[in-house]
Every structure is written in C-alpha cells, then in structure tokens.
Image (cartoon, rainbow, N blue to C red; front, top):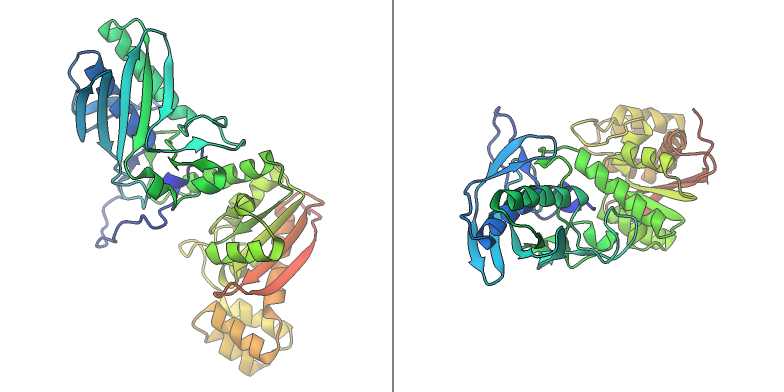
Length: 381
C-alpha cells in the first residue's frame, strides 16, 4: 500500500522547535493506531471494558501502549479513536484521529471496510487489490491477530466486521501521493514495523518503489523521476505524461534508478532542478543538503573546460547559488547546463539496464528546461 501519507509531510509539517541535543522521538503508524482502536472497540462491543491505554504487540514483537482519545458502545458494537503521534517525524497524519468501529459477527474471520477518510484502491500494482479498502496487509494482520486473541479471551466464537476511518483523511490525502497511485477517497492505513522513525528515508523509498510498481502494472512505457513539483510540471509538458507516470523521487536519485534497474521500463526521464542535478552529476545518489553540497568550484571547472575565462570562473565560484552560477554561464554563452545533463546522464546510465531510453533534463525555478541529454543506456558496470 502507498506509504505516502506517513512518508511525506508536504503541507503537514509541524512548526520547528528549538534545537536540542535530545534524541528524536519515534512515533507509531496509522496501522498501530487502528489496531489499538479496534481492540478497544471490540472489547466494548463484546460487553467488556476498554483498556486505556491499550496494549498492542508490534509486528516484530515489541510491546507498546496507546492512550485512547475516545471510546463508546454503539448499537451493533463499539467505536474508539486514537490520536496519531508520529514522534518527531514531519508526518502529514500527525495529530489525526484514527478511529475504528467493530461489530461482532457469527462468521469467523475479520472483514475490513473503509470508513470516512480512508481510501479505496482503484488501480493494480499495490499490495491490496483494486476495490479493497486501502488498509495495508500488515495492519490487517495486526488487527486480525489481536481481535482473534480477544475473541478467544472473551469466548466469542465468531469474527468481526471492522471499519477504519481517519478524521479529515480525504483532505490530508490530497497532500500525499495517494491520488496519483489510484487510492481514492482518503488515506492509506499503513505500517510494516509499526514504528515511524523520524526523518528516515526508508518510508519515502517505499513510496517511490510503489509508484514505479503502479506505473508498470498499468502498462506505462515511460516514467519521469522528478525532484519536485516544478520538475513534474516540466515533465508533463515535455513528454505528455499524466500523474501516474510522474515519480516524485525528491533527493533519492539512487533509490529510484536502482529500483528501475531491477524493475525496468522502456523509457525513463530524470527531471531535476539544476542544483540537485549538479550534485547527482558528481555521483551523489542522495542530494539532500545533509548528504551533499553544491560544489561551485566543480561547476567553475566544468565551465572552464567549456571555454570560460578566469573572470567567469571567479564569478561562478563566488556565486551564492548554483542557479546564479548557471545564469552567469547563460549570459556568457557557456553551455554549463548541457554539460551537467551529460554528466548526470552518464551517472544514470550506470544505474539503469542496457537499452533504456534515458532523457535527463535540468529545470530552473520557473520550470523551464535549461539543459538536456538523451540516448539509449549502455549500463556500464
């Protein structure tokens, strides 16, 4: 299932706090929240008291306890809500109320439904089949195992009907990759380990991989790996791609391209801001500022190789940003963007399988393509 809602904080980042040497707090996924709410709701529905906090065993065996926001008996069962705490991760779902309504059934097993704020899968390529509620397999397993244990404890011979919802989920989902992946009507209920680790790239990598899987499963022959919204808009214009073909890789060039080596497509475009592309061109597979920096001296050396004189080199080295350095070269007629695209193309060529049609485009802040490189990859090892 798409992990976008717990991997991306676009529009959902909490205000910065004062710097501290204290370790960053981990959080718990929407899947764990839904599990805790399901346990409390089921207990109420079976005539028992809801524990608060609710003990939950995570997929790897860790024991956690989650406080309830609310819990009540309803006509055919129980309903409970838990407030999602993502720790110190800038998670779009942090602070959202995840709720579960549970009704006991005579038939064994657990049936899942999407409540308000939880989406429905509409396209192939995700772990849940189209038409099913967007509740990831691991949360389904967690809820099922906890409810089965509860049924045995309380002597319930049947199963459960479980509805999971998120208050405001449809609005939050608009800030995630879910609509692009074919998850309509709300968020995904997620989690593989149950733990949200602050600023970890693992969840974001998973969202990139699943976006590629969706594109392949729906028969697309080309995707564009983009660093942000500006480069995505440029990819739409240049290649006529729709949203399903746009892979938001952010800084993770290596993570996207290595996955495409293992799950190839006929054509791949790399659309990136000039600064990030210049980092990738020098071999940085993660271009986040924490991992790599703009190398103005290297840009000046490239410009010199293209015929720039000492004065122009000095202006490039003294520039405040890579785009300022690019503007200096554009004024002087030095094709620095084309050179950087060629260097980046060679880096991507090493990561993709032979015969992939590879286009690399550098984009400025206005979304204009300022440099390109194109050709079929040789996949040099």
